[in-house]
Image (cartoon, rainbow, N blue to C red; front, side, top):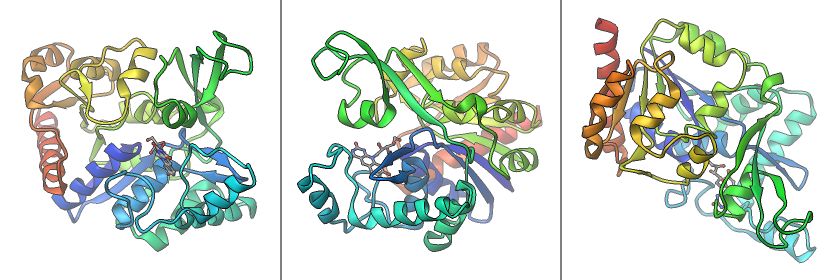
Length: 327
Ligand code: FO1
């Protein structure tokens, strides 16, 4: 079975670990979000691609959900000693190697998709990981910084990099707009449209619907390819009850005018894209509303407490796909 998954960071990676356990013989292609990418110390860092690669490759720092295990931060300390920031983004010594190799290969003219393939040769994630595009896309967030944190003076509206919003500010101020800068000019990376066209099923894992899945869908051609694929497209809600399971998805959902509820996210994707939607059992009362939007809906446990729980979710998604296909 050929499965295509649009994945962001931690939630997507943990779901993929369950999917691999649920259908070990499946051919899984992951279209990874690159809007979180940031250039630091002259290096290109791809947090969502690395989180998928490390999680499925067995190197992930499990508690954090990002970065590597057995990390040291000597390089970060030395950079800080030179007063070279930012200090708020924790790059470990082992992780630096990934960004050095990536930046070296990009500098030699390899596209990000080829670089990602080369890095995966080492980590062997057991899926094909393709960035959504080889072109530069970086998500920025419009905020009004209350204090003098803004060079433009307090109360001024500014656009800051997603990572600064997410990591330095911990999404503590409202996101007034979320803009995937460069998305309009970006082209799907080689293999992306082909994988979608050849897929037997397409999955939206419980990744952030705005800054992860939403950013992938913002690359011209990808949303259309999925809508036209003619195979079941099944999503899993990242919102349980009225709160995101992890991260601060509610902050960026508000920026695009979407309430932080399981049915609202399904409606945001729309029945033109989604054929089926899994909500958590606590949201069983919302099934009717989602079905009224033309999207088949089931309430199943959606807390990825361990790999087996994620595998059960994956099986539920594939079961719903078959029900949708049978219609
Ligand atoms: N997230 C944090 O909350 N704090 C960090 O210092 C941090 C560093 C970091 C370094 C490399 C990397 O690949 C990811 C990192 N993340 C950190 C997570 C990152 O912000 C998120 O994983 C994604 O960008 C959102 O999905």
